[in-house]
Image (cartoon, rainbow, N blue to C red; front, top):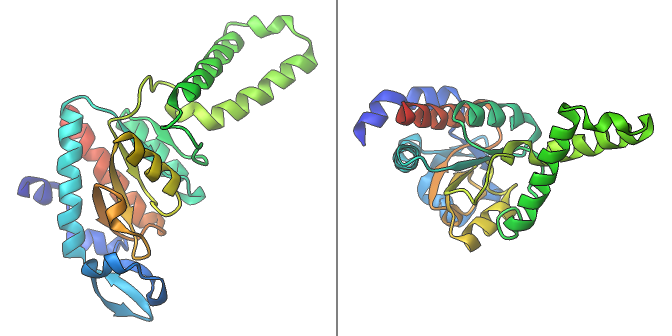
Length: 231
């Protein structure tokens, strides 16, 4: 997989993006020890050579999925990350979740699917003017309901079955998603900071999960990989 490394992974770029900054020493998860190269100002520093190797493995897996036309769900629910998750998922033509993870999205998928279907029907009724027959007050209630449903389901409205894999940009924050994916046998690529158990996911990317620059870098590389594979 050296071609992937040469084409899109660069250690200097990763450093500039701040992928190497971990958490305070006191917050270390013991299983992250192999990925740490040192300490600076009481903060663990992640070994970017190891990050590169793990990231390459993740990208090779993502390439394989994209070539097979498989679906990868992007999950990033931190406020500061939402726009980047959404834009990179859309560029990759992949579904996404940027609001709070809805418990049961994987484990109770049939129910979620029914809610998504209802949202699409309501959206269609509004677009075709079918809601015009209702009173102003009733239309206002429909609009409010549509907005709530849009926030919850916009990113997964075209997902008709469980995804083949999930990209989790903060495993600690979206632990419920990771647990549900494990229960349903969905493969996981996950950004793991120094306070996270890397064995929770199938393809861990040891990196800073707080800095926008770090998450943006990871997202862009994943999105690039998917687009290149498809073209």
